[in-house]
Length: 248
Image (cartoon, rainbow, N blue to C red):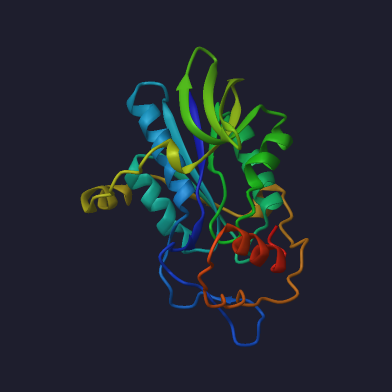
């Protein structure tokens, strides 16, 4: 089984992002960047499947600026076999990323496409679903367990009422949730070895995909400050306070 894993370079989850003074965008200058945590879980799951003898090759793909190479090198250090960087100075929207991944998946003839369920910068949670639609492939989102069978996979996914289990014929698209696994710590020797693994470069134009933005951000603003908490005497007063605040 051949696995494609999509990874995104985002602001590190420990960083508190600020809005620029003019409200035109968020300020990510000189802040720590890292692999999207959900994508890291997807890479870890792909590596575990390979270690269990279920996968033969892992291809990591990232779409974005030149510095995305660092994110791909991390994926290679975790255990991916090779990487593909689709370089673009324009931040691609979920649909554009899905179109590019679909092109790569078709060329590489992959069996399983693993993605994080969402990126922590835009929280869109759209790319995996769009990718499945473009490929006309079965999908399972928010996966918390994956088991491989003969020509199919069984995915347990989290839903509002608990979990459900789906059987998907390959090729299939799966997005990873937090409870799928805990990513391994990447050691320095592995990072050094990753520099020797192949990393191919291309552009969206090479794949025949237009990534021009379809959405326009009007303005960015900090969330309103939370008001001071107050203590209530009983449940009745709590309900009255919630109703006054239109929280019920």
